[in-house]
Image (cartoon, rainbow, N blue to C red; front, side, top):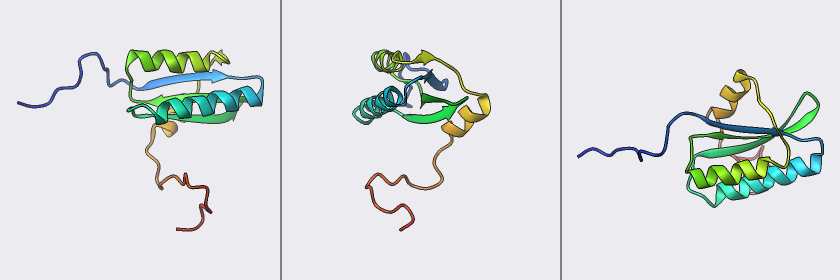
Length: 110
């Protein structure tokens, strides 16, 4: 028998975005989202960027269990719901071309 996807998990892209007035609150929301993602088996990524001179936090990827969605929604509720252009969303959903350096070393070194 072949494997089946879990019936309650859709494969539609997941995207939640919030804008923030305060850089520190945006940084906190981003770090909190990163921590939740890191401790959960999921295919999500968090991004923090400027758009229209305001910091934004986006969480994108493959849809997740409903309870994790509630966590992400709660984290992003520290800001205002927002959206991003389709072109940017497509870029955020692309797999990285190089491995991410999480060790704090010099990213220019192999």
